[in-house]
Length: 341
Image 1 (cartoon, rainbow, N blue to C red):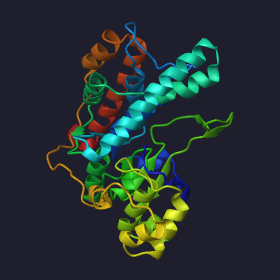
Image 2: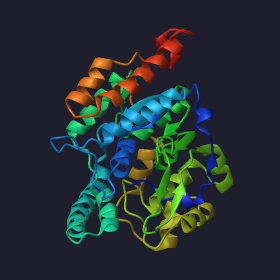
Image 3: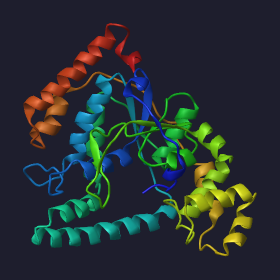
Image 4: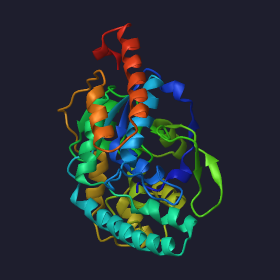
């Protein structure tokens, strides 16, 4: 879901060439949901194998990740750990949305309304434990690091970017900025054009870079006040203040030096402790137990997982693995494979 502050952000369009040779942290759950939402049939159905198991996420991981690697980009996949208790309300809300969307999708399907089918199908996306497990396996088989966050993956990546171990956070959500990631990279795993919600209009999707320091300077606030803005417009950990959008939230944090003053001005008494939400972003949990180690792709393991288990086309998978191996050999001729990425 993420925090809705996008309209205030001036995005810098970039070419993927800018990231050549750089190690980036992938907000894995965010990207997997992106794949599940976007990689679908014309009617909105996700890709599935012969047994009816969803494979859109694996398709995205294989082809779009290999595209990054072939461009010289070095992805590290960071997965969420134990979620905060405050996130449970958001998770319940998402489950309700999925349930309602499934019902609306079936109704649209019976009525033959393709556009509505596509609309509601995207809202039904969900990840189960087996899908997460296989996603991690595929990433590791491709020779890429998998890191388990203590809690939120975005917080873990922000910590690693600040340490200089990663260049930036790859995510579609803006939460990474609240967690303090110096650089947010959007539309890195997206290709082609995207349809605007509710409109028969398509826009070209281009990679974007957002630098936290420049963003805060432009708004004239610090990160703490950015977090306050998030609390006002709503985060994954709290409901939004009624009637307050990004521009009003910005004005409130610019004109007040404490959140208590903001509460008085809005005349809304939240049913949650804003200090708990603030702490999640300003002092997040992260792990020091991780390793950024790259290795050669495991051809047989990739084929077993994708072709034998999930009915992927063998020739297409082999073609991807061929390119991954060529890239590894190319870098290996310059330095040891362990140092390449």
